[in-house]
Length: 170
Image (tube, rainbow, N blue to C red; front, top):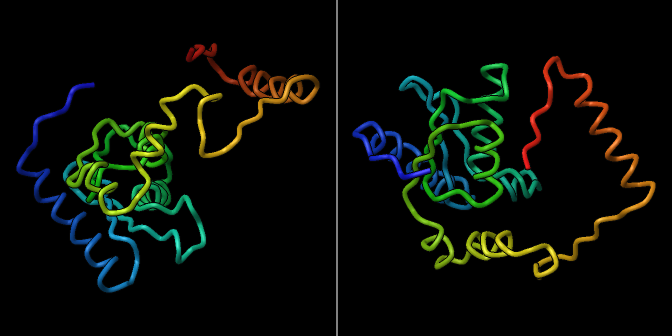
């Protein structure tokens, strides 16, 4: 998908996300990341990195903002939202935006900027681009046999209960 042009509104919401990241760092001792979920020009949720505080490696700013938006709005899909982030999201946060069907993401600092300052985002992006057998940060094992069959059966059972035919996403 191509980059969308910046808007005046983008700068205003990015300023808020950057201020959240500054506040997280300077006032709360957290890592400097902030994110907003905006719908129809209104901030519906915010998030800062709470990884250390919550002892939760998934508690990144974007994930926290999506969790707060979901709780506030009573839904998990955000097809009408824009995610504003102080920095380009890591792979996990980017995929969280995909899962939530956020159609637009706007950020300030890039993954390169984040990497220069000691965060692993670029390393993770590079790892994910490799075939499983070539990844070096952890060992992956796909188990076959009965375990595989039972797991696939559970997936098929879920798909069979849907009110519409499943479209494979291959």
